[in-house]
Length: 117
Image (cartoon, rainbow, N blue to C red; front, side, top):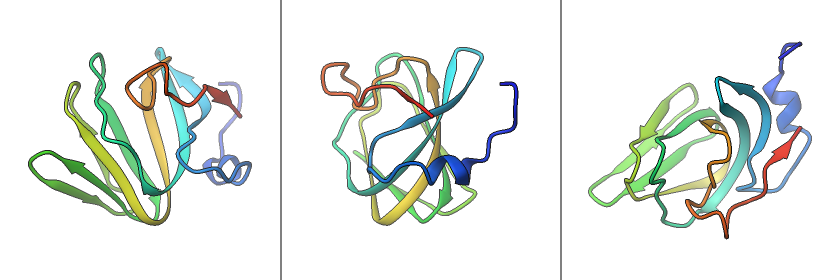
């Protein structure tokens, strides 16, 4: 990265939910922002953990044995291979950090395309 990144400015460049946008790279990982609302599908990532950091709003992550609630400034890591379903009752903004090329649905055939902003 050559310059600073303003996450609020990047989040202002799109409106679609559940479509991560890559804002930078770090040691082979994508730094992504995403807006979420409603439910995402149950899925897992066989090869990587899944990090969620709430910037604005409130995120819930269903796991098979419990549910995690995250507020702004809180993060949670879902371990590789663990099924989970994130959802938000109102629009919520997140920072995600994942190995580059990780499909957001856990399946390359159904994943959102990598979008750089």
